[in-house]
Image (tube, rainbow, N blue to C red; front, side):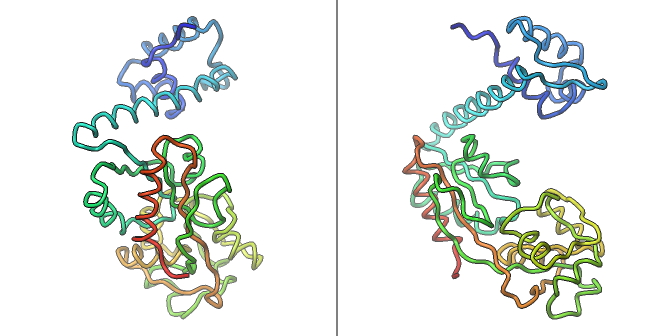
Length: 301
């Protein structure tokens, strides 16, 4: 069966999904809104079905549109990956491994990883994938990344999994924060101050599960900041407080002038894991990178 949609039309569909509106997608694609609307109508004509409907002046994907969105996401990601792999091959790299770091993960060990890969596995290229921090396991399943660094509960059983270690949870705050004079922070103290988090979705194996729900306490206000740098900046410039694994807190907190304190009896811990898919073409390269990360980034339980 002949393929009806072009790469340009798939890019249009992907841009609409990411941008959320015709005007924003047109800016991203550097075309006029009328040109983008024409592309939409052309794609719908080729497929002989509506891909979008107007609801409250907003463009909403139909079931057919959602299906094509999914295909566009996968096809464009694979095409981009193929082009990058070919570019790397000209420099002696024959396989590329993509690493996704969850939002909580620190980055200070990455330079050593790059250096050692260049020495021991010069044919393996390493790329750090953006925009997977809040759901790296989903990115693994979609094969937009090959390896994920995750914390909390163990990854699903169908992943290759390496346990990196057990990590205490620490509270972080500015040195001027009212709680900074305490040697440890009791869970009930969080109720009186704004809490700065990556997002507001409760997750198992992390601070909501281990601190707030376990001790029946909630902060007075939760600020969603999205990324580590924004979390730490907001904590440093406000009366907010946050909780991070020690691996991240001790490497990143001092850069923002933050102090760390244990929580309760200091026995609240999370777990760090490496996860990778079993059945993939570059499995041996993925396992080599996973073993190297284990050697560099693991810590004692």
